[in-house]
Amino acid sequence: MSELLKVENLTKVFTSGLIGGYEIRAVDDVSFSIGKGEIVSLVGESGSGKTTVGKLILRLLNPTSGRILFEGEDITGFNKKRLKTEYYRKVQAVFQDPFASFNPLHEIDRAFDLIFRTFFPETSRGERDEMIDKALESVGLNPDEVRGKFPHQLSGGQLQRILIARSLLVRPKLLIADEAVSMLDASTRIDILNLLGDFRDKYGTSVLFVTHDLALGYYISDSTIIMYRGTIVEMGDTERVFHNPLHPYTKMLLESVPDVNVKWEFRGIEPETEEGAVYSIEGCRYAPRCPLASEVCWKRRPELVEAEKNHWVACHLYGGE
Ligand SMILES: Nc1ncnc2c1ncn2[C@@H]1O[C@H](COP(=O)(O)OP(=O)(O)OP(=O)(O)O)[C@@H](O)[C@H]1O
Ligand SMILES: [Mg+2]
Image (spheres, helix red, strand yellow):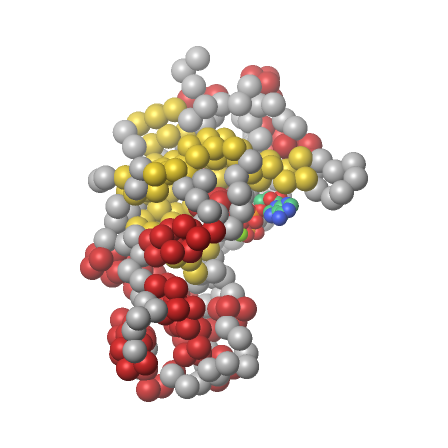
């Protein structure tokens, strides 16, 4: 599979508070790539840095260091104009809360205005209407049922489909979906996941699917990246990561997925480390929670190593050193 996006040593450091704040290394030396037509899920608990990775790729945030190569070109230096006219033609995003993306006072049709102004300025009113209808139909909506309506007259699922239709109107090469189905009911969720899969099959659209829900990641993706506190702890073929999890954190995550066939037992919450302290750990960020941590884990950051074909893990248990 040829490469579409590659991030190299991507790092974003925030400071908590103004005075006496500590460093939050929200994304810390993260490298991965997404192939053309590949669906990659980015999984991890709250605060692991998933949204920050998405925002860096979208250049809604500037990286502290590292590179983002799209089709081989480093986009970290793109100015606003290049981002708007070139990059966003190829990279689009859908976020969690569909209600927040619409102006409650405007008919939903108006949500398409900016896309037309930016990318299809020459189109006539009639052409635009036709393009909107087609885009809505492509996400399973009947244009007559949604056009001319206000956001409050539609369901969250319908609004999210409209946003996806809008993003896909420019036929992007990469769609970043950040918790894009988290607010939807289970059946709408699956419909939308299938829709993304269909688009990939039809147009070769790659997807970075950001989620804290492992089951959704498993359902939709070819590859999975597991993040913990700003670092990638494991990544690779989804089947391999799920059926042969290597990192203690991945194992813990998979064990905590509720299974309808197993009576749920409370196992106790793992001790959490204070946020500021986590980012100052020289070694593995998971060490304070890891039942298998040894001295080296606190001292040295484990590198990602290929433990089996297309399956990497950053853990001293597999370092071979
Ligand atoms: N603008 C900001 N300023 C300061 N800290 C930030 C900022 N944005 C994010 N952070 C911090 O960076 C860390 C990673 O946040 P991020 O939103 O990327 O996590 P996430 O994995 O998307 O979590 P969630 O699953 O809750 O959406 C968190 O500790 C967060 O508080
Ligand atoms: Mg997030």
